[in-house]
Amino acid sequence: MKLSKIDLSSIIAAGHKNGQLNLLIDRGEDIELIEIPAPVAAYNGLQQVADIANRESNLTTQIPASQPIAMLPVNSTMAAAIGYDPEQQILQVEFATGKIYQYSDVEEETWDNLCEADSIGRFYNYQIKGHYNSRCLDDSP
Image (tube, rainbow, N blue to C red):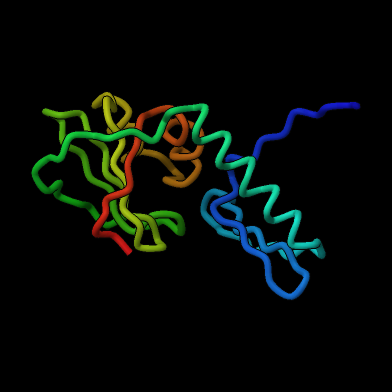
């Protein structure tokens, strides 16, 4: 069997409907929906890969509850707003989908770089996603 290295970090979401595998892909400033003819088994396989990766990376952990973080609206197709608590080093991201995630132990320099980035989505994908422990806030949609 030949194995190939693949990077799936730009895939935001996946679904399956009417024989089509639907992938929502973050292209930096744009989000693209790709539809690929595929059996539902392809979608189920992607779900299994995601479950294994999340379980083994142990990057989704409990972050202690904190005071509400002030959020700044951003011009991004990926995120609606971002915020940072420098005392607890918690970055909070409200995605365009409405989901809100917090990332722990984020250095203030990373926050500054995120705020100055030409593309919030691209910076998030390469510098934050998968690099910090995270949790989804329960009260987000």
